[in-house]
Image 1 (tube, helix red, strand yellow):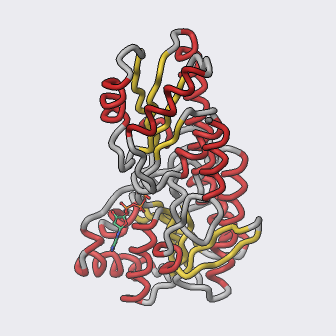
Image 2: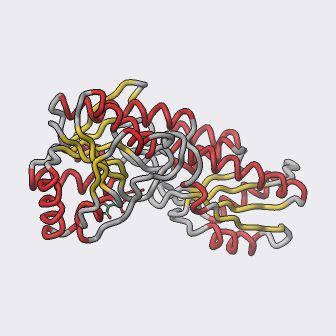
Image 3: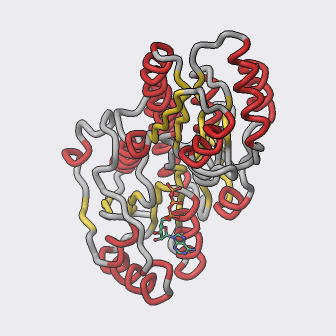
Length: 323
Ligand code: ATP
């Protein structure tokens, strides 16, 4: 391997820049040529590819987002689109790829490897933490910290007015942010996509907390919750608890932004190094992750298919602490 292309794809996540920097610096350390592929697979198809030098990656470790930019590319899902992308890579002489993204992005890397044999290394870059083969994905810790910081502020106003707040956090298919942010912000209840919570039991819980003289209640709702959006749940609960001053806050995209936490910087840095070293050792079609602080390479098909489950014990802890 002499020339490695790096791209970020799908939803952006804090720490992606740190991962790019680590991979590129490691490539330079081993005298490889490193290429930035801009705007994910879309840029690969449109030949938006540039050779990187050390100046490109100066002062990016601490910045949120991704300087390579990210995109979702429908064209890459087609065989013609992937053929164009392959031609562009060949013209640049790029002989390996590092793809930083979520399950969709890694699926693309796997397909591309199968079709064209381009060695592909995936890095788990998503705030959702929904990839197997790693304890945490790059960006997850920062997103949880951002959510907790925001909920702390909501708590101040909730307490001052004895309000009931429904706070919607990101997580269409996975409740990891909701569970972490919920436990970390003393939520009264946490509604996640993995479980369906009947409105009646939520109402009972809120009533019992009122009896216990809790002056504020915050319910965390993951956006993909089976019981509905935060607004829909708030509307239903209002019918049971008309005397409550109920408010809804959707944290939205602020959860994607901001400087990565020290945890995410370390994770991204270790995995960036591992990505290049793994490719040099002939580890292809795998995702580098960190399990118990050790780098582990998991076949991409396993990382994306084995759905990581929300820890049952976290659910138990959340329940005990909110009763
Ligand atoms: P996040 O978890 O943050 O949403 P993601 O990587 O899962 O990130 P997706 O939108 O699912 O985000 O995928 C990103 C891109 O990966 C898609 O726009 C597409 O270009 C490529 N991709 C996804 N699925 C496939 C597939 N089945 N075949 C080829 N390419 C794919």
